[in-house]
Image (tube, rainbow, N blue to C red; front, side):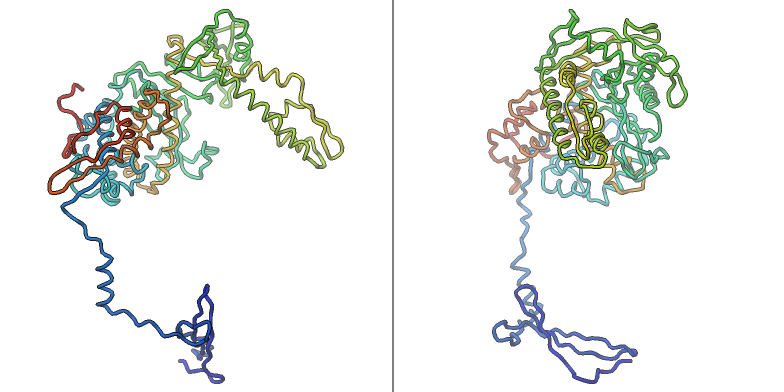
Length: 571
């Protein structure tokens, strides 16, 4: 029940919004025993006369329709324009590496859609929701004669079907890629966060690499010597790194390859891990850490050795000493799990190499030397400036907490609430003696050039792969089949990206180029179709240079209905 309020009746109020004034009539009424304020809009107010302005008459339906017609852009069905150069370039590259051929052999008809999606993912930076829009903007749909849409719903159904029904197809595809690869390099594992349990493999891992509050799954990736991925494998997030090496080695051997080389980062460099590689006959490359006494001894002996030679890699000169290093039991020491610990040895140690011997390449890089010396000097200068500003009850503790391990370079003494700090006399000379030096450990059958190429392949692939790690997190799906399908399509995207990166490096261009900039420039080449007549607009010098960089013929005609492989090619 409600009734009008008794008293002063209706009031008018004016409210300002920006530079405009608006009038409202305010009244109140009693509703269910409570007073309720009622506001009714009256219109705009003239700021000079303070009077209500005349309301603009409401548009009629006919008027609104006329406005809509004037704003409407008529789509000309007989004229088609699309970005052509990108799909033309990527199609030539994927045919060169037989990607479409292997997909067609393993998946059949859907392989054409897979290639089209992979190309679109590269063009839209890996965003699945943008695939359909990208295919509409480019010539991809007509190039491969793709029928139907590839919108978000269609892609979800397609990726789920791949993840559900195509595990054997994916395995067959990996086998073809591995057999095709030259100089197989098995990269070590990395972890990625995901929203699904991945068949129970995803686990919450404490202190994971990316500090993510989500389940983690490990991925092992095998590449060729140019850093182009050949296959991947999932492992439980809490499986040890050495177990994944064993699993990956078995998988690769099951594909008929026994020449896998395991290229790892410094985190793998321990006596136990290297002994594991040696005892299982695995070829390996690992950069050494300088925490080992044996490695420190090699760094000290480098300048005294008469066997140091000049070596060139990727246009850069190094000083290299090839020597031998070994492994023996570390007496009285065990690992955290209670197993026997092992240590690196040189010929000065007792029991040198009793558990195996392998090659150590001690290398000096003059550019690395300059960078490390400059970095050390900047660090010393920054910490001295920090020390000057410390005013605390315990200034020594404050400085040590800020300096961390770098505190070892200073003599530190409290002076009341302030500090007396000086740089140790041998600090700079010690760092200078070690600057520019690094040690690569490898199995005995690997020469220095192979070691450097293999580590480059791992490092360059890691850079691309790390950028793609975020894709799994953006799936926001708890459906493992959908995630597996999407991950496989992103793997095809990754293969093409890495192939382009390798070809850019091999071209040794005067000006730097990225995959993204190459695709963007190629996409400036447009195709047009009008009254069934197709043509390519004139291609300028920069666009021609892109095609020459990738050794792809400059397009002269607009292609449609293409196969994803060359039936006449010997593959």
